[in-house]
Image 1 (cartoon, rainbow, N blue to C red):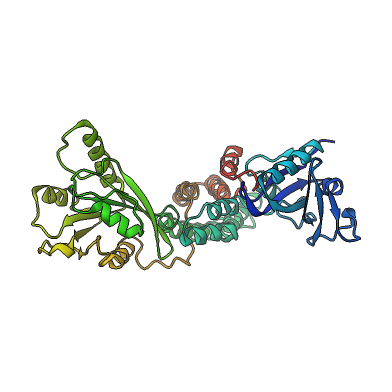
Image 2 (image 1 turned 180 degrees about the horizontal axis):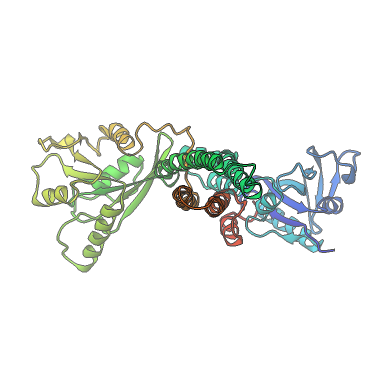
Length: 444
Protein backbone atom coordinates (compact mmCIF):
# COMPACT_ATOMS: atom_id res chain seq x y z
CA UNK A 1 0.00 0.00 0.00
CA UNK A 2 1.31 3.48 -0.94
CA UNK A 3 2.08 5.67 2.06
CA UNK A 4 -0.17 8.73 1.64
CA UNK A 5 0.78 10.48 4.88
CA UNK A 6 2.23 13.98 4.53
CA UNK A 7 3.81 16.33 7.08
CA UNK A 8 4.83 19.97 7.28
CA UNK A 9 5.31 22.92 9.60
CA UNK A 10 2.02 24.87 9.69
CA UNK A 11 3.20 27.89 11.66
CA UNK A 12 5.72 30.46 10.32
CA UNK A 13 9.30 29.26 10.09
CA UNK A 14 11.80 30.66 12.58
CA UNK A 15 12.00 31.11 16.33
CA UNK A 16 8.71 31.54 18.19
CA UNK A 17 6.75 30.56 21.26
CA UNK A 18 4.93 27.64 19.63
CA UNK A 19 5.36 25.64 16.43
CA UNK A 20 2.73 23.29 14.97
CA UNK A 21 3.75 20.33 12.84
CA UNK A 22 0.83 18.83 10.94
CA UNK A 23 0.43 15.25 9.64
CA UNK A 24 -2.43 14.10 7.39
CA UNK A 25 -3.25 10.84 5.65
CA UNK A 26 -4.67 7.39 6.26
CA UNK A 27 -2.62 6.62 9.38
CA UNK A 28 -1.00 9.70 10.98
CA UNK A 29 -1.64 8.35 14.49
CA UNK A 30 1.01 5.65 13.92
CA UNK A 31 3.71 8.35 13.85
CA UNK A 32 2.49 9.79 17.13
CA UNK A 33 2.60 6.31 18.65
CA UNK A 34 6.30 6.11 17.79
CA UNK A 35 7.26 9.69 18.66
CA UNK A 36 4.99 10.80 21.53
CA UNK A 37 4.81 9.54 25.10
CA UNK A 38 1.69 10.88 26.86
CA UNK A 39 2.06 12.20 30.39
CA UNK A 40 -1.20 10.54 31.47
CA UNK A 41 -2.42 6.96 31.27
CA UNK A 42 -4.21 7.24 27.89
CA UNK A 43 -2.26 5.50 25.13
CA UNK A 44 -1.86 7.31 21.82
CA UNK A 45 -4.01 4.72 20.03
CA UNK A 46 -6.85 5.54 22.47
CA UNK A 47 -6.67 9.31 22.10
CA UNK A 48 -10.07 11.01 22.15
CA UNK A 49 -10.31 13.08 18.95
CA UNK A 50 -9.98 16.86 19.19
CA UNK A 51 -8.48 16.72 22.70
CA UNK A 52 -4.98 17.99 23.49
CA UNK A 53 -2.68 15.62 25.39
CA UNK A 54 0.56 16.72 27.07
CA UNK A 55 3.69 14.62 26.91
CA UNK A 56 7.18 14.11 25.58
CA UNK A 57 8.18 14.07 21.90
CA UNK A 58 11.16 11.98 20.78
CA UNK A 59 12.96 13.17 17.65
CA UNK A 60 15.63 10.47 17.97
CA UNK A 61 18.56 12.76 18.75
CA UNK A 62 16.69 15.00 21.23
CA UNK A 63 13.36 15.36 23.03
CA UNK A 64 10.83 18.15 23.57
CA UNK A 65 7.82 18.57 25.85
CA UNK A 66 4.55 19.68 24.26
CA UNK A 67 1.06 18.65 23.23
CA UNK A 68 -0.45 16.29 20.67
CA UNK A 69 -3.98 16.29 19.20
CA UNK A 70 -5.78 13.83 16.91
CA UNK A 71 -8.43 14.91 14.37
CA UNK A 72 -10.57 12.01 13.16
CA UNK A 73 -11.82 11.88 9.57
CA UNK A 74 -14.01 13.24 8.15
CA UNK A 75 -14.25 15.98 10.80
CA UNK A 76 -10.82 17.41 10.13
CA UNK A 77 -9.40 20.18 7.96
CA UNK A 78 -8.36 17.84 5.15
CA UNK A 79 -11.20 15.35 5.58
CA UNK A 80 -8.56 12.71 6.43
CA UNK A 81 -7.19 11.59 9.79
CA UNK A 82 -4.85 14.28 11.06
CA UNK A 83 -2.39 14.71 13.93
CA UNK A 84 -0.77 17.92 15.12
CA UNK A 85 2.36 18.27 17.23
CA UNK A 86 2.37 21.47 19.31
CA UNK A 87 6.04 22.08 20.08
CA UNK A 88 8.34 24.81 21.32
CA UNK A 89 9.03 27.15 18.41
CA UNK A 90 12.72 26.54 17.83
CA UNK A 91 14.16 26.06 14.34
CA UNK A 92 16.25 23.04 15.38
CA UNK A 93 13.25 21.48 17.18
CA UNK A 94 11.00 21.75 14.12
CA UNK A 95 13.66 20.53 11.70
CA UNK A 96 14.46 17.58 13.95
CA UNK A 97 10.80 16.56 14.31
CA UNK A 98 10.14 16.74 10.58
CA UNK A 99 13.38 14.86 9.86
CA UNK A 100 12.25 12.10 12.24
CA UNK A 101 8.80 11.92 10.58
CA UNK A 102 10.47 11.51 7.19
CA UNK A 103 12.76 8.80 8.59
CA UNK A 104 9.64 6.96 9.76
CA UNK A 105 8.13 7.10 6.27
CA UNK A 106 6.09 10.30 6.19
CA UNK A 107 6.38 12.42 3.02
CA UNK A 108 7.02 16.20 3.11
CA UNK A 109 3.90 18.05 1.95
CA UNK A 110 3.90 20.12 -1.23
CA UNK A 111 2.69 23.71 -1.42
CA UNK A 112 -0.99 23.90 -0.51
CA UNK A 113 -1.31 20.12 -0.32
CA UNK A 114 -3.30 20.09 2.93
CA UNK A 115 -5.88 22.50 1.49
CA UNK A 116 -5.87 20.69 -1.85
CA UNK A 117 -6.79 17.47 -0.04
CA UNK A 118 -9.56 19.38 1.74
CA UNK A 119 -10.86 20.51 -1.67
CA UNK A 120 -10.66 17.03 -3.19
CA UNK A 121 -12.42 15.57 -0.14
CA UNK A 122 -15.27 18.07 -0.43
CA UNK A 123 -14.40 20.05 2.70
CA UNK A 124 -14.30 23.36 0.85
CA UNK A 125 -14.83 24.75 -2.64
CA UNK A 126 -12.17 26.20 -4.92
CA UNK A 127 -13.49 29.71 -4.29
CA UNK A 128 -13.26 29.05 -0.54
CA UNK A 129 -9.61 28.03 -0.96
CA UNK A 130 -8.97 31.30 -2.81
CA UNK A 131 -10.57 33.21 0.05
CA UNK A 132 -8.35 31.39 2.50
CA UNK A 133 -5.15 32.34 0.69
CA UNK A 134 -6.41 35.93 0.40
CA UNK A 135 -6.89 36.03 4.18
CA UNK A 136 -3.43 34.57 4.82
CA UNK A 137 -1.74 37.25 2.72
CA UNK A 138 -4.06 40.10 3.74
CA UNK A 139 -2.59 43.41 4.89
CA UNK A 140 -5.81 45.30 5.56
CA UNK A 141 -9.24 44.70 7.08
CA UNK A 142 -10.80 45.07 3.63
CA UNK A 143 -8.72 42.14 2.36
CA UNK A 144 -9.65 40.04 5.39
CA UNK A 145 -13.37 40.70 4.93
CA UNK A 146 -13.26 39.96 1.20
CA UNK A 147 -11.30 36.74 1.78
CA UNK A 148 -13.65 35.65 4.55
CA UNK A 149 -16.64 36.12 2.23
CA UNK A 150 -15.12 33.52 -0.09
CA UNK A 151 -13.81 31.26 2.65
CA UNK A 152 -17.23 30.92 4.31
CA UNK A 153 -18.65 29.69 0.97
CA UNK A 154 -20.90 32.73 0.47
CA UNK A 155 -19.99 33.01 -3.21
CA UNK A 156 -20.29 29.25 -3.72
CA UNK A 157 -23.82 29.22 -2.29
CA UNK A 158 -24.95 32.09 -4.51
CA UNK A 159 -23.43 30.61 -7.65
CA UNK A 160 -24.85 27.16 -6.98
CA UNK A 161 -28.32 28.64 -6.50
CA UNK A 162 -28.13 30.05 -10.03
CA UNK A 163 -26.71 26.79 -11.36
CA UNK A 164 -29.74 25.03 -9.88
CA UNK A 165 -32.00 27.45 -11.77
CA UNK A 166 -30.19 26.57 -15.01
CA UNK A 167 -30.34 22.87 -14.18
CA UNK A 168 -34.11 23.13 -13.70
CA UNK A 169 -34.40 24.92 -17.07
CA UNK A 170 -32.40 22.13 -18.74
CA UNK A 171 -34.71 19.57 -17.13
CA UNK A 172 -37.73 21.39 -18.59
CA UNK A 173 -36.14 21.32 -22.04
CA UNK A 174 -35.32 17.63 -21.63
CA UNK A 175 -38.91 16.84 -20.67
CA UNK A 176 -40.18 18.60 -23.80
CA UNK A 177 -37.75 16.70 -26.02
CA UNK A 178 -38.66 13.35 -24.44
CA UNK A 179 -42.41 13.94 -24.25
CA UNK A 180 -43.32 16.54 -26.91
CA UNK A 181 -46.99 15.58 -26.88
CA UNK A 182 -47.33 16.04 -23.12
CA UNK A 183 -45.05 19.03 -22.45
CA UNK A 184 -45.92 22.12 -24.48
CA UNK A 185 -42.89 23.79 -26.08
CA UNK A 186 -44.20 27.36 -25.72
CA UNK A 187 -44.74 26.85 -22.00
CA UNK A 188 -41.24 25.46 -21.58
CA UNK A 189 -39.79 28.37 -23.57
CA UNK A 190 -41.45 30.87 -21.20
CA UNK A 191 -40.08 29.03 -18.16
CA UNK A 192 -36.59 29.00 -19.67
CA UNK A 193 -36.78 32.71 -20.51
CA UNK A 194 -37.57 33.55 -16.89
CA UNK A 195 -34.68 31.39 -15.72
CA UNK A 196 -32.24 33.05 -18.13
CA UNK A 197 -33.44 36.50 -17.09
CA UNK A 198 -32.92 35.72 -13.40
CA UNK A 199 -29.43 34.29 -13.89
CA UNK A 200 -28.47 37.17 -16.18
CA UNK A 201 -29.49 39.70 -13.54
CA UNK A 202 -27.46 37.82 -10.92
CA UNK A 203 -24.36 37.80 -13.12
CA UNK A 204 -24.67 41.49 -14.00
CA UNK A 205 -25.11 42.58 -10.38
CA UNK A 206 -22.26 40.43 -9.09
CA UNK A 207 -19.87 41.42 -11.89
CA UNK A 208 -20.62 45.10 -11.18
CA UNK A 209 -19.05 44.74 -7.71
CA UNK A 210 -15.69 43.56 -9.07
CA UNK A 211 -13.87 46.87 -9.45
CA UNK A 212 -14.92 47.98 -5.99
CA UNK A 213 -13.92 44.60 -4.62
CA UNK A 214 -10.49 44.88 -6.20
CA UNK A 215 -9.89 48.14 -4.33
CA UNK A 216 -10.57 46.32 -1.07
CA UNK A 217 -8.07 43.56 -1.89
CA UNK A 218 -5.44 45.01 -4.23
CA UNK A 219 -5.59 48.41 -2.55
CA UNK A 220 -5.72 51.92 -4.00
CA UNK A 221 -2.64 53.11 -5.90
CA UNK A 222 -1.74 56.73 -5.17
CA UNK A 223 0.87 58.62 -7.18
CA UNK A 224 2.52 61.69 -5.62
CA UNK A 225 3.60 64.02 -8.44
CA UNK A 226 4.83 67.57 -8.84
CA UNK A 227 7.87 69.59 -9.75
CA UNK A 228 11.05 69.16 -7.67
CA UNK A 229 11.24 70.52 -4.13
CA UNK A 230 7.51 71.00 -3.51
CA UNK A 231 7.71 68.64 -0.53
CA UNK A 232 6.49 65.39 -2.11
CA UNK A 233 8.85 63.25 -0.03
CA UNK A 234 7.96 65.14 3.14
CA UNK A 235 4.28 64.54 2.37
CA UNK A 236 4.87 60.79 1.95
CA UNK A 237 6.76 60.65 5.26
CA UNK A 238 3.99 62.59 7.00
CA UNK A 239 1.27 60.32 5.58
CA UNK A 240 3.14 57.18 6.68
CA UNK A 241 4.19 58.69 10.04
CA UNK A 242 7.81 57.67 9.53
CA UNK A 243 10.74 58.69 7.32
CA UNK A 244 10.41 56.56 4.20
CA UNK A 245 11.84 59.03 1.69
CA UNK A 246 14.96 61.18 1.90
CA UNK A 247 14.08 64.84 2.43
CA UNK A 248 16.46 67.53 1.21
CA UNK A 249 16.29 71.16 0.14
CA UNK A 250 18.27 70.16 -2.96
CA UNK A 251 15.88 69.87 -5.90
CA UNK A 252 15.86 66.45 -7.59
CA UNK A 253 16.92 64.43 -4.52
CA UNK A 254 14.36 61.73 -5.35
CA UNK A 255 15.62 59.91 -8.45
CA UNK A 256 13.66 56.65 -8.12
CA UNK A 257 10.06 55.87 -7.15
CA UNK A 258 9.75 55.52 -3.36
CA UNK A 259 6.84 53.36 -2.18
CA UNK A 260 4.94 53.14 1.09
CA UNK A 261 1.74 51.53 2.37
CA UNK A 262 -0.95 52.95 4.64
CA UNK A 263 -4.30 51.50 5.76
CA UNK A 264 -7.16 54.01 5.90
CA UNK A 265 -10.48 52.80 7.37
CA UNK A 266 -9.60 49.19 6.62
CA UNK A 267 -8.50 49.79 3.00
CA UNK A 268 -4.87 49.57 1.86
CA UNK A 269 -3.40 52.58 0.05
CA UNK A 270 -0.14 52.13 -1.88
CA UNK A 271 1.74 55.42 -2.25
CA UNK A 272 4.43 56.14 -4.83
CA UNK A 273 6.57 59.23 -4.36
CA UNK A 274 8.07 60.18 -7.72
CA UNK A 275 10.96 62.22 -9.00
CA UNK A 276 10.00 65.79 -9.85
CA UNK A 277 8.64 66.08 -13.38
CA UNK A 278 10.79 68.56 -15.32
CA UNK A 279 13.42 68.64 -18.08
CA UNK A 280 16.17 66.23 -17.05
CA UNK A 281 19.75 67.42 -16.61
CA UNK A 282 21.38 63.97 -16.96
CA UNK A 283 20.60 60.36 -17.95
CA UNK A 284 19.96 59.16 -14.38
CA UNK A 285 17.50 61.96 -13.69
CA UNK A 286 15.81 61.29 -17.04
CA UNK A 287 15.19 57.67 -16.00
CA UNK A 288 13.62 58.83 -12.73
CA UNK A 289 11.34 61.27 -14.54
CA UNK A 290 10.35 58.49 -16.95
CA UNK A 291 9.27 56.35 -13.98
CA UNK A 292 7.30 59.31 -12.65
CA UNK A 293 5.34 59.57 -15.88
CA UNK A 294 4.52 55.86 -15.72
CA UNK A 295 3.21 56.26 -12.15
CA UNK A 296 1.15 59.19 -13.37
CA UNK A 297 -0.57 56.92 -15.90
CA UNK A 298 -1.01 53.85 -13.69
CA UNK A 299 -2.27 55.39 -10.42
CA UNK A 300 -5.91 55.24 -9.28
CA UNK A 301 -5.58 58.76 -7.88
CA UNK A 302 -2.89 61.43 -7.96
CA UNK A 303 -1.69 63.85 -5.30
CA UNK A 304 -0.46 66.84 -7.31
CA UNK A 305 1.82 68.71 -4.91
CA UNK A 306 2.43 72.43 -5.23
CA UNK A 307 4.58 74.73 -3.12
CA UNK A 308 1.82 76.77 -1.49
CA UNK A 309 4.24 79.47 -0.38
CA UNK A 310 5.10 80.40 -3.99
CA UNK A 311 3.24 81.43 -7.12
CA UNK A 312 2.68 78.72 -9.73
CA UNK A 313 5.82 77.98 -11.73
CA UNK A 314 5.85 76.95 -15.37
CA UNK A 315 6.40 73.30 -14.37
CA UNK A 316 3.41 73.46 -11.98
CA UNK A 317 1.13 74.63 -14.77
CA UNK A 318 2.41 71.92 -17.09
CA UNK A 319 1.77 69.20 -14.48
CA UNK A 320 -1.71 70.56 -13.71
CA UNK A 321 -2.48 70.47 -17.45
CA UNK A 322 -1.00 66.99 -17.74
CA UNK A 323 -3.21 65.66 -14.92
CA UNK A 324 -6.37 67.50 -15.99
CA UNK A 325 -9.27 65.06 -16.29
CA UNK A 326 -7.56 62.46 -14.09
CA UNK A 327 -8.74 61.60 -10.59
CA UNK A 328 -6.58 63.86 -8.47
CA UNK A 329 -6.26 66.00 -5.34
CA UNK A 330 -4.30 69.22 -5.78
CA UNK A 331 -2.26 69.81 -2.61
CA UNK A 332 -0.80 73.19 -1.62
CA UNK A 333 2.06 72.23 0.70
CA UNK A 334 4.29 74.35 2.97
CA UNK A 335 1.50 76.38 4.59
CA UNK A 336 3.96 76.92 7.47
CA UNK A 337 5.98 79.17 5.13
CA UNK A 338 3.07 81.26 3.92
CA UNK A 339 0.07 80.72 1.69
CA UNK A 340 -0.61 81.82 -1.88
CA UNK A 341 -4.03 81.46 -3.52
CA UNK A 342 -3.40 78.59 -5.94
CA UNK A 343 -6.88 77.09 -6.18
CA UNK A 344 -5.76 73.86 -4.49
CA UNK A 345 -8.17 71.27 -3.09
CA UNK A 346 -6.40 71.29 0.27
CA UNK A 347 -3.77 73.44 1.99
CA UNK A 348 -1.41 71.71 4.42
CA UNK A 349 2.03 71.51 5.94
CA UNK A 350 3.72 68.13 5.56
CA UNK A 351 6.53 69.34 7.81
CA UNK A 352 4.15 70.26 10.66
CA UNK A 353 1.64 67.46 9.99
CA UNK A 354 -1.10 70.05 9.48
CA UNK A 355 -4.26 68.79 7.69
CA UNK A 356 -2.73 65.35 6.98
CA UNK A 357 -5.73 63.56 8.50
CA UNK A 358 -8.04 65.63 6.32
CA UNK A 359 -6.02 64.59 3.26
CA UNK A 360 -6.40 60.92 4.24
CA UNK A 361 -10.15 61.42 4.53
CA UNK A 362 -10.25 63.06 1.09
CA UNK A 363 -8.24 60.20 -0.41
CA UNK A 364 -10.65 57.64 1.02
CA UNK A 365 -13.75 59.52 -0.15
CA UNK A 366 -12.50 60.11 -3.70
CA UNK A 367 -11.48 56.48 -4.27
CA UNK A 368 -13.51 54.21 -1.99
CA UNK A 369 -16.30 56.59 -0.99
CA UNK A 370 -19.25 55.39 1.06
CA UNK A 371 -18.69 51.72 0.30
CA UNK A 372 -19.91 49.38 3.01
CA UNK A 373 -16.83 47.20 3.45
CA UNK A 374 -18.98 44.64 5.28
CA UNK A 375 -20.92 43.86 2.10
CA UNK A 376 -19.99 41.06 -0.32
CA UNK A 377 -17.88 41.94 -3.34
CA UNK A 378 -16.35 40.01 -6.20
CA UNK A 379 -12.57 40.22 -5.76
CA UNK A 380 -10.90 37.52 -7.89
CA UNK A 381 -10.10 38.24 -11.53
CA UNK A 382 -10.68 34.56 -12.34
CA UNK A 383 -14.23 34.78 -11.04
CA UNK A 384 -14.89 38.02 -12.92
CA UNK A 385 -13.68 36.61 -16.23
CA UNK A 386 -15.77 33.46 -15.71
CA UNK A 387 -18.86 35.62 -15.11
CA UNK A 388 -18.24 37.53 -18.34
CA UNK A 389 -17.99 34.27 -20.31
CA UNK A 390 -21.08 32.88 -18.59
CA UNK A 391 -22.98 36.06 -19.51
CA UNK A 392 -22.01 35.69 -23.16
CA UNK A 393 -23.29 32.09 -23.20
CA UNK A 394 -26.50 33.31 -21.57
CA UNK A 395 -26.94 36.04 -24.18
CA UNK A 396 -26.62 33.44 -26.94
CA UNK A 397 -29.29 31.34 -25.24
CA UNK A 398 -31.59 34.36 -24.86
CA UNK A 399 -31.17 35.22 -28.55
CA UNK A 400 -31.64 31.68 -29.87
CA UNK A 401 -34.73 30.88 -27.78
CA UNK A 402 -36.77 33.20 -30.00
CA UNK A 403 -36.04 31.25 -33.19
CA UNK A 404 -34.02 28.09 -32.57
CA UNK A 405 -35.26 24.67 -31.36
CA UNK A 406 -35.02 24.12 -27.61
CA UNK A 407 -32.33 21.45 -27.97
CA UNK A 408 -30.04 24.07 -29.52
CA UNK A 409 -30.86 26.53 -26.74
CA UNK A 410 -29.88 23.90 -24.20
CA UNK A 411 -26.30 23.87 -25.55
CA UNK A 412 -25.77 27.51 -24.51
CA UNK A 413 -27.58 27.01 -21.18
CA UNK A 414 -25.34 24.03 -20.45
CA UNK A 415 -22.25 26.09 -21.34
CA UNK A 416 -23.32 28.81 -18.89
CA UNK A 417 -23.81 26.17 -16.16
CA UNK A 418 -20.35 24.73 -16.83
CA UNK A 419 -18.64 28.13 -16.71
CA UNK A 420 -20.29 29.05 -13.40
CA UNK A 421 -19.01 25.73 -12.05
CA UNK A 422 -15.45 26.90 -12.72
CA UNK A 423 -15.86 29.48 -9.94
CA UNK A 424 -16.63 26.91 -7.24
CA UNK A 425 -14.26 24.30 -8.70
CA UNK A 426 -17.06 21.97 -9.76
CA UNK A 427 -15.92 22.11 -13.40
CA UNK A 428 -12.50 23.81 -13.08
CA UNK A 429 -9.60 22.38 -15.08
CA UNK A 430 -6.65 20.73 -13.38
CA UNK A 431 -4.40 23.55 -14.57
CA UNK A 432 -6.57 26.12 -12.76
CA UNK A 433 -6.60 24.02 -9.59
CA UNK A 434 -2.79 23.62 -9.75
CA UNK A 435 -2.29 27.37 -10.17
CA UNK A 436 -4.48 28.25 -7.18
CA UNK A 437 -2.85 25.82 -4.76
CA UNK A 438 0.63 26.82 -5.88
CA UNK A 439 -0.03 30.15 -4.12
CA UNK A 440 -0.24 28.42 -0.72
CA UNK A 441 2.62 27.86 1.67
CA UNK A 442 3.80 24.29 2.35
CA UNK A 443 2.09 23.94 5.73
CA UNK A 444 -1.35 24.95 4.49
